[in-house]
Length: 596
Image 1 (cartoon, one colour):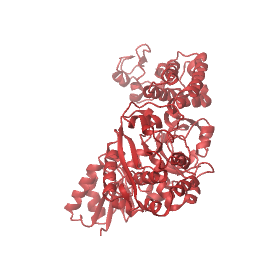
Image 2 (cartoon, helix red, strand yellow; image 1 turned 180 degrees about the vertical axis):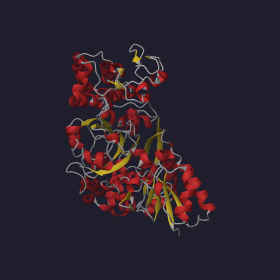
Image 3 (cartoon, one colour; image 1 turned 135 degrees about the vertical axis):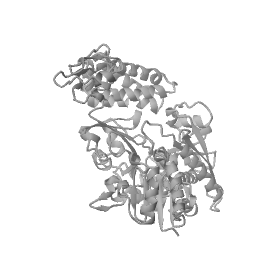
Image 4 (cartoon, one colour; image 1 turned 90 degrees about the vertical axis):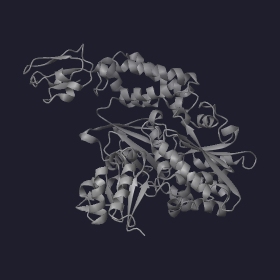
């Protein structure tokens, strides 16, 4: 029996900050103080506070340390774990309130969250099946196999109102019901989309790294419900920690008889294999993903027939993403009414978001559907750094749109976001402030889509390229008002004619920025000016003669020698030589240089 447990985040974010070395050094320090039998060290998944990592939580004290370094370990062990004195300089700032320490659940970051899909992330060791079982793991599978019929399972998921968390928001139970119509007649498959392809999105990866068994359990439940005996998890090879923990979890589940033949002695057989993706964004589309699993180039197929009728290996198949599956065991154990009690009328439950961009608390959050964007950004996210104003939030990645400040109080759910020209997507939420150029943002996402298009259909292959060329022309100050009209016309054409979801949603960032920020497009075209001061070809750096002291610092740091002037004399920038790198602005000590 240990008197203390030290939980150290082992997710990708913290691992990149040497959390694995921290764990090793922590164990060595415990040995040095002969505390190895009194203090347990547990490697967990993501706590959500990615910008504050590495994160370390000490129980039973519930003390959270942030940004822990290797050099801090001896002090933590000697002062806190040996002498019982908290190392205050390392305590996560927000948990130090009113001269007393608060648990993470009491902080503003956690207070408005409701962790269902993420309930075990940051709590258990993801490489231990015993710890998962200790938190009711595989109990839902046992209940399903021994107490429920397949149709009862499907009805429970239908009654819960769970919709697919991968982007489209299709009712999960309905998808399962469609596939179950072939039960017993042909081979049926269960697939999991763990591709996580949106820029800035890492929700699925974090669940796999922090709680892989929940996905295995949910897929087995799905297999029982639709009559499938084989599952595949499609995960990108760039997620080595997630892949490794999945492999460990599958092996453990097989050894415990929770995957494989005759699970729980019920005669039900179900096994899962992993298929690695090469990072193609288009393989997030369900038919392209299945084509890739089959060993072919990942390209989408026309629908209908839909995968529930003809999917993997031309057999009926269901495909849900990691977050969708992570909700299934809780729904079975707590009931459909419990899940449906959270969220809004048409969007039940919670949603996980990867919160990034211009935000203080970059990280992973899970909120009840219907939570306002203001709550997510100002309270959970800690607001925007440096006193800047909120300008927009991009949801849904390249397939989504921008939510402007006028909709800052919109409740986040599937229907509300679609109504304002955005979409939920898989859960990326990128915050932008007044220094972001919305034309440049649209161009960034179009460039990504152009690179990721599989090229199978003409509207996507050629249309997105033409859209990108027009945006590039506008950001260089060479655009015309006719270009803006052509851009909008192309966007609607591609949206209506592309083969798959990638092409159909690719114009969304452009359409939403045109809808809410058309004045920025017109400023680029009519005034040859970027209001946010981002587009380099439209920038001009100038020196205020009244503020310039002639210190020569700007000239010494200019890579093209575009700045001239003698010591203690006013300097001048040669606009023909200036490459708009901003080095002069960064190095001026007298606020004499402006960018406009």
